[in-house]
Length: 385
Image 1 (tube, helix red, strand yellow):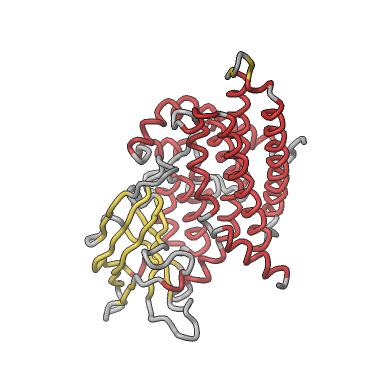
Image 2: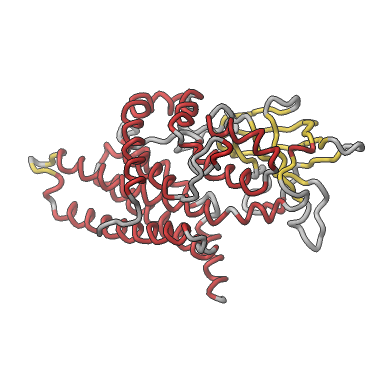
């Protein structure tokens, strides 16, 4: 089906991103995966290209766009080339909305220009060894000093994407003990400078996929955080976290769809070239049928993504909508990429082939931003059951 979701400006931006990937990302990507992170210079280049400033208001150095469609273009082009930009998605899609919506004018003036340029990279630290989906179980604490000038932060976080390279980390912590009647109360967000004494980066975690995206364990030992670094109101952290989940889940859905679409292209190229028993793999009926099934599922996912992008543009994408699109697109991606890997035979299991990287990279999509099971619970609740 002809796509109408993107306009001329989006397609011009797409061309820029595609050329950038071909020249500056793809040739070095295997090395970045081996190192477990992208070079900081890549983030500065993304800043120069304006990638980090798309949705940042002009007074802070950005372009002032409100559309998520530019982020969709980036995800599609990265998937098409079988690469990623490291932890950029956390910087732009997760942290940015918090700074824009809850940051004071002083905080925005202090942080956003460097955010846009890539001079300052950011991350968000929610998950703890004993608290994942249940954020109410967070045990990291921040005690306000007697003179009210700073918090003293103590605790540990894990699975923090971009944590090893971040300069500023939004840390979700307890500023007051949990109320038995409201376990979600008492959570706040502190913006922690990683140069602070007592902050530590522990293990860089070894993942089965997303290997160019650093993921780390973090520790906080009596870290002094100025009260000026409190984001929003004290105790309102949980409500802030839930408000951003719609856009976060849309982003996960877009990435999943883009990876599934790319998988079909990788499989098509392989089966047209590869021969078995003197015949191209593409000539077998099974190959044709598998690709036809995959193309149909991906078309459905694309239609859902495009509709969601349009609805998000006018601010009407609901929590249930986002849950449905994330559930559908991530599950489709899992099925399609698995089938496309199968068409590669043994070579599909080799990391030198992009389909192998896609297979490993995409698996986590059904877990983060809310697992498929959580999405089903949200959808069922919306149905009234």
